Amino acid sequence: MTELQAEQGAQALDVPHAQAKTRRNRDALIALAVFVVLALLPAVFSSKLLLDFVIRCAAYGLFATSLNLLVGYTGLISFGHGMFFGLGAYGFGLMMQKTGVPVPVAFVATLAITLVVALVIGAICVRLKEIYFAFVTLAFQMLIHSTILSWVSLTGGDQGLRGGIPRPPFLGIDLSNQLHLYVASCALLVIGLFLMHQIAQSPFGYTLRMIRDNATRASFIGIDVWRAKLTIFVLAALFASTGGIIMALFVSGAYPEFAYWTISGEGIFINMLGGVTTFLGPMVGTVLLLILNDTVTRLTEYHGLVLGVVILFFAIGLRKGLMDFVVEWYAQRRGQRP
Amino acid sequence: MDLDALTGCLASSACLVTQTTSGFIIGMLLFLVAVGLTLIFGVLKVVNFSHGAFYMFGAYFAMTAYQFSGSFALAMLCGAAGTAILGLIFERVFMSRVYGADVLMQLLVCYAFVLIFDDVVRMIWGPEFKSMGMPAAFQVVPLFIAGGVVPPYYLLLIGVALAAAMILGLGLARTRIGKVIRAAAHNPGMVSALGINTGLIYGGVFALGGMLAGLAGALAAPVRSLTPGMGFSVLIESFIVTVIGGMGSILGALIGALLIGMIRSFGSLGFPLFTEGLMYLFMVIVLVSRPTGLFGKEVA
Image (tube, rainbow over all chains, first blue to last red; front, side, top):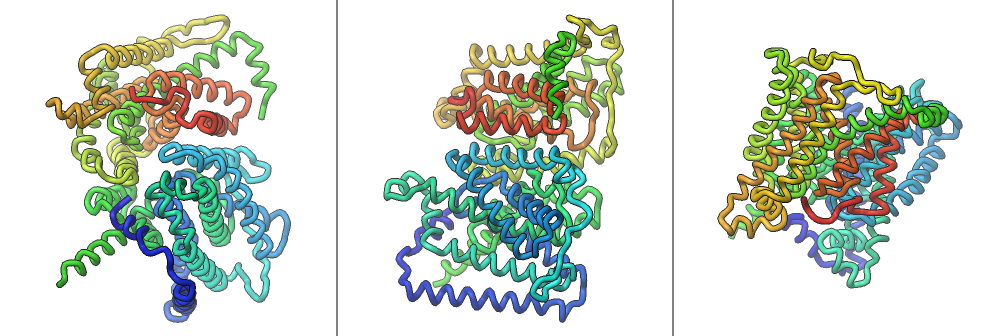
């Protein structure tokens, strides 16, 4: 995609095992530290709005970062990634409403359903290339959206899953308490980001970059491109589904918009806003978009107009996402120093 | 699901005629939008995500012109010409800046304009539903064909769309400009080396695509209600059409549009809630069996 990505892909692949292990430990420590800071946040700022904001960031952040595993790392531009966000929300919500199983069981079961659905859809989609991949994923997304709308007896149709999602306490965690939900969302976010970062840094992650840069070459040296693409498609779906579960818990319901194509559009937009070449770009994009949305919606009723102009600034002005811009600018500055 | 209604309709000639006509109307309007989309993709290699906005502007321009002049012909002209100018400006000022860039950047510029255009329409014409109304010339007794009701306006609409398809197809195949456009789609470097201004061709093709979408919007204005954001569902459907027909193929767009029109028209009887789902299902089936669409191969 850009020179920066090519550079990223050209890094040495044969990181010795001991070095990889220390790096993993370091990442785990950083993740733990971030989690502690986030968990302590409510003690410092007692704002309910801030907690809500972070929970939404967790839901969308997991979704957007997982989408970047496809878009940025593998070069698979998916227009239908939102279907897994919606699947997570509806799967989890229905499970809690209809069966009354404990929360952790419903969580794992929802991921299992996502896994199966993503395997089937992915097996069909990843055969296709570029714009056709984008469209067939979009079609699957809309198919799921239409199914949600038309299967009224199960999903409530365009009204969505209403009546609240029961959240019985488990292991001393009560997700109907906002503070507990906050800490749980932060934990899921940090764990999710940690796992995705490990995937991106693993040899498999470098295989993905190679497929993105030159799929033909990858298959010539014996990589099963189809299987690698399918694997990352399924993995990304699992993280997107987790984001959907957080969202369902947060709004205590699930709505057809969660599975509409606009969710995927927003995901792509978040990635472009934050940048696709750095791991944390989508996270930055998520925070930016949510802040932007919240403030603009408060200031003017024409918020599409303002948002559009901001997007234009990024697309035509910077020609890349914010993190990409910062990283490149920093690299250039360092390069110019004697 | 209501399969009885569908089988009942298929058995009655009156219902068959009515549904087929309505499928034709949906299909011909979709074709006009989709053929612009496919042309722009074929020549500029840009997926114009903002194409639905031109359909919307076409409808609003036509309504405004009709309200001021009372002339239906002028309304159609304003709808088509207005969007052609808009397309030219849009391409020259904004799209031409991201040709070399990532596909995602092009999509993002279009996405930005979807948001902007919708709000601009909301500012100028207000957020509520508007209606242009059927011109007096067409407020006549409808035709009855085999018991089915066919308003004369529908025939005009189908006729205009078919004429546009023929002019476009012949123009691209036979005229010098058509040949230059096809050459530019194939090898822009060569065309520009021959001293032809490719920027002008790109702008022209974009304007032509915008004009066709605007014409569709103007033709739809008397029979549909107008609202900001109305371009969106049309855009998604015309994407399905281009993908089913094969990106860049005009014949494909025509056949894809008619197929989708019929699916929508008859599907709404048998599967009232799942009509959209049927379209996507059809698209999935086509793409899985023929990844480049039914007629997808080369450009224009």
